[in-house]
Image (cartoon, rainbow, N blue to C red; front, side, top):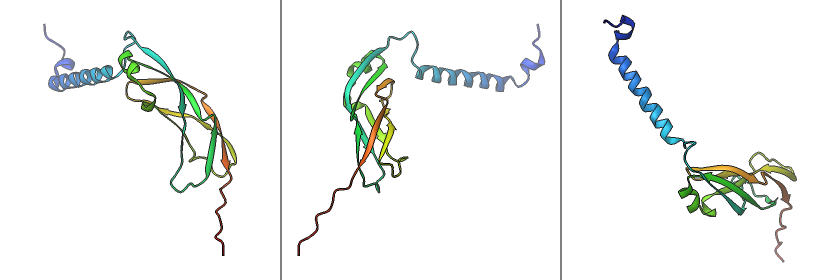
Length: 139
C-alpha cells in the first residue's frame, strides 16, 4: 500500500517538525506542576512590608498596616522549607506623585516553585509624613 504524496513529500521536514513539537511540549509540561502532585499550603504571618521608592524620592511615608499575612502553596518539600525571608512583600511608591494620603496594592515575590494564593490585606493605606525640620546653626 502506497502512502499519499501529501504525507511523503518533504518527509524529513515533517519529522523534524514533529520531533520539535514533542520536545517543546515535554519542556513546557515538565515546568508546570501536575494536578495530581500533592501540594502543600502554608500561611506566613506578620511579614513586614518594604516601601520601594526611586533614589530621588526623599519623602517619609508610613503604611498602615505595616505587615501582611501571605498564603502560599507548592510542592510540600519546598513549602515546608520556606522561611519568611524567602518572600518579598512590598509596595511601590513610583505611581504616587504628591498625594498626602493614598491606597497601595501590596505586591509579593515568591521563590521559584512557590505559588502565591492570597495576601491579607491586599491593599494598605499610605500617608506622606511632613519632612523633618533641619536644625539651623546657631551664630
